[in-house]
Length: 383
Ligand SMILES: [Zn+2]
Image (tube, rainbow, N blue to C red; front, side, top):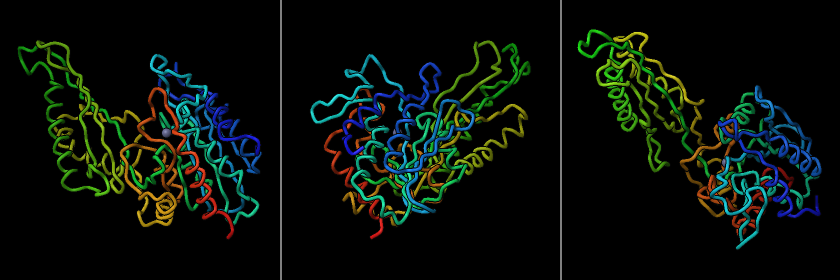
């Protein structure tokens, strides 16, 4: 392990494809990456546990632990990447290319490269002097369902004091982000000849009322809820897609609307769903069984750590960057359910994530290794 440098580590992890996608033709197992990480962390003296994510054959989480007991620091990240657009990449996504002070490759910053940084940081620390345990968590399917992180949260098998998720924040500590919900409302009416409205039940007319109610809810969210750390303080509601009917001379029998809502810390998915159902109640009374509401994906809650929390202050001090709130989602809300102070902090910029020719700017290398070493020393090593 001592002989492997960061570039070697990067080459070996980027070479193992681990794409997750809701499109089955893209979706891959992350097993090869998990095996590689198991090897890396065993060599560093960690006890390694690999578990299959429930009901997802070929998808695995890895938990590596060095040290005893509860508490300590968890360094976490996801092993999967998004798919890539072959026509738009100028480099081989699975072969690290070093060029112009950059390392190109799929996952260099989002984010399996982060595990190479962890190894690089740990190999020069004396881990025989651990006061508190250090844990490494590598999850599956963050880019699609967050099933790996959800499984960790529901198993509740570990209780770290602090967690750092190495998504590309440009080494700025992130202490808060909104969640995301995608919902569908389907109205089922009854078709009929358009010459007489009494021939049917018009789903478009019911949807018109539904949309009026949703816009009222949107206003209500803006007036009554907000968090000043966000540029857009309130939980938002966006009407995104609608389809209904087939012909001007038929009463429309079916209409479906898709919209999203973005929860904020303290106003979670359950509360937003409650407000939504309350808003739709009068319509349901008027048209029993006509209105159906379904999640398009499982809700991702918002996440927030107290700006005054020890980990947030430590990360700001170590990096020299004040903590901030961002508008993208991570696994933080699930990791936080373990009861730990949680931040997102890692090398590379989010703007380069999910892009052709994803790259790590090499200027992040030294500071990232130092930040990780500081965090481990501060929260796990005896003084
Ligand atoms: Zn990511």
